Amino acid sequence: MRAVAVIGIGKTAFGALGERDLRSLAVEAVENALQDAGVSPKQAEAFYLGNFAGPSFVGQNHLAPYVGMAAGFEGIPCTRFEDACASSGSAFFHAWQTVAAGIYDVVVAAGVEKMTSQTTPRVAEILAGAGDMAGEGRAGATFPALFAMIARRHMHEYGTTREQLAAVAVKNHANGAKNPLAHMRKVITLEQALAGKPIAEPLTVYDCSLISDGAAAVVIVPLEQAAWYNSRYAKVLAVVQTSDHVALDEKADITHFPAVKAAGAKAYAMAGVGPNDIEVAELHDCFTIAEIVASEDLGFAAKGEGGPLAASGATAIGGRIPINTSGGLKSKGHPVGATGVGQICDVVTQLRGDAGERQVGKHRIGLTQNLGGSGATCVVTILEAA
Amino acid sequence: MGRDGVVYTETIVHAPPEQYAADAPYQLAIVELDGGGRMTARVLGKTAEERVKIGQRVRFVEERSGVAYYRRDG
Image (tube, rainbow over the protein chains, first blue to last red):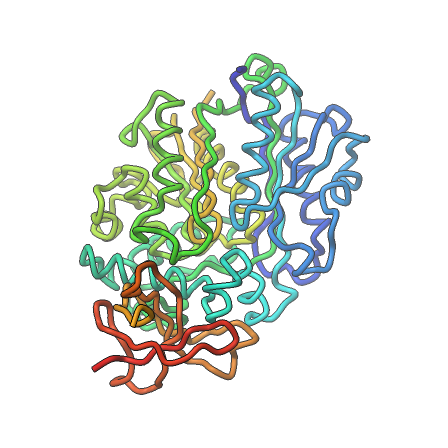
């Protein structure tokens, strides 16, 4: 197996981008990544595009060649990956496999979602399709409801508090306010977060990630070729994809995500590092409780200690383990299909030292964790600066 | 009754999907069934006294369109 490197990153701004259509967003991100990599579209050998629900959100199927041809690719395999909110994490994992296996040398992995052309209740209904529609979905479980039930149980078993959940939102908004590409660049107070409109108790609007449009892309090549293109590459030390039950009521213990735990353990073994070696992380905070649970599953805190970790300031920029310096899904935005590759772009930006006022002090090794559904898919990557 | 059980976790949904807009706010629970297994179900009632918490017993009332409805037991 060959070692792999990310040689180019590209993102659009995330937000309610009314006038922009899905294809133009994806093309912009791909063009930015190719330009950053110093690669022409004609050099790309495969294009893997993560997208959760283009057919439902904008009525367009067959997205990968639809985007790929507009981006200037020539006759190469173009395939869409759908694993709910981990769609582009999955696209990246499969792109990595082809380069690691020696099948291709230059592959583009991207993700896109165009969500804001639908009403919020319709978005909730489309997103619910990432759960078990014959069971929990039919009973009326939205994604906020599923994560609210995870939060309730976590609070019951470990004493996690409303204030600890809110601390995640306050921290991520503080970070996102400094990110020029973030959807909601707004600082919020703990009091505001606690007084938010209820969405699914105990979660308020401030515990929920945003409904956003946006796209992200990366270019990967074998590590031994990386420096030919771009001296500011990042090594892919590990990328692991795992799975678990789609329905929340089929999981034995909903206070942790087995798929995250397994992906983390395998990724640490593959990279030859441990949680204490990670200097910056982008975790999938689709809801505040999800960041708390993931911080435990990935070993940044002991089981049940994710809430106190968030409230302690250890996950802020300048803390022991800065989490979601981009603002996370909470503030940066969550165009679901773009999120996994977007996280990789965000960590590579930190590893290059390009994060401006959000830059963390030590930035040699970073981690991303992308979650699909209520934990049915997880992709974890560990990246190292060149 | 195997369909009765204990609340494993719960939430009150204020922002429903489009098709359940008329029901909101409604309580959802994952019920630990006496007969084994868990099920995501609706809890009937709108008042604070009718709402359920983790660990409380619930009684199966009926099934409508494939969804199980429960009521607080005691």
